[in-house]
Length: 429
Image (tube, rainbow, N blue to C red; front, side, top):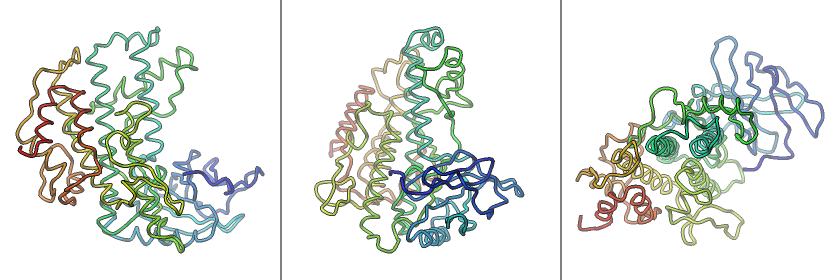
């Protein structure tokens, strides 16, 4: 989503909000939300507004405040969001709206005050910080130099464990994101603007402000390496094979129901953001030039005669509810297989074992996850939120997932998985 270049610049300084137009001096907004102190760095910026976290000075509690750029229909959007948040069926995934209104001076700017997920970050900042930390960890374990000496001496198994750890962490986030999408869809809600700035995630392990190792002095490099959660974890390590989805709340629900907006456009945007966000979340799984959608699905990008673009299969639109369900099936299959690929290896040399401790139940679970009606599905490998989302999914005679390519990936990751995955693909088993 591109930022609106003609919109007012909205910023925060010393806890207060300012607006700026065409390079002029920032002007203090009308003192309406005087009980709130705004953080200087916004949580997110998008085409329709800016989101800040703010501290209530009286209650000592944090809130999220969305400020909308002035334009036609914006006050209707604010009302739509508030009404959708009043729907108790989606309360568990929607950031609850506490108040709404507008500033009158120097510009009429609508706002919504919402609950804040504890120490929340946007999906965009989570991905950016994860990617920086993971790149730094890879540089530290593969390059020579005094500041990297400790990491160069780590055993191959230590490095392999870190690689599978970042893969497993991405599955937790993908599952959490797809859970909120499926919860909305089953209650008849198409969000229409699931851009990374509208997805709020509870605090996570990755650190902020990692600087480029190429520019930082040696002493600073060493300090940043110590902060890196993949090299120096705080608390227990993420163990591949069990999904614990991250707590997520969604904001800005009014996007697909404004006057003049076709419902089809909202569905196309929903499909686009579902696939694009999961592509970004699961980027560590693939080489730099590839994505999940290119590697593991039958989806392709297309633009129709009206100019609307999204991910599609053949020449037809895809129901975003099917997209979310198939992607969640894929995430859960990847979790099960990654757990086996991680546990069945020498954790000193990182060499895979010659055999695989795969059970008949694993085989049954894989087939159910790929093809089955999951209303009665049981698994100890996923948390309750993910299990509830899975149980909304019915039988699939076809799929948007290119399962043979998925199986090839895991057979390369651990060759002993190959014979078992052949059985999954064989209808006689």
